[in-house]
Image 1 (cartoon, rainbow, N blue to C red):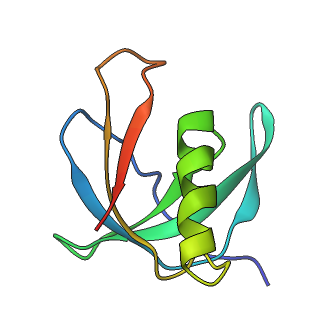
Image 2 (cartoon, rainbow, N blue to C red; image 1 turned 90 degrees about the horizontal axis):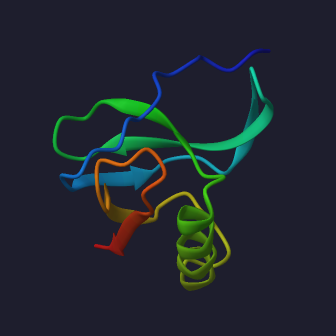
Length: 95
């Protein structure tokens, strides 16, 4: 059974509060397969797919999952881009 396709989370330079609600899985993109997790914006309740392949995201998630019994689901973060540059790193903090 195919998983429901959620909209993609678009990160800006403003913090967004997110709760991870799934374990990682891969989706097919025009560049091949990419890892994602489903997240819920805790401010408005909307759910999204959050791409986690960027190194600045992956490093922080690796740290946070170790603190969360090796699970992604249940991690609460606030996230934003460092700048509006397309390749700017993500800033992620545990909440």
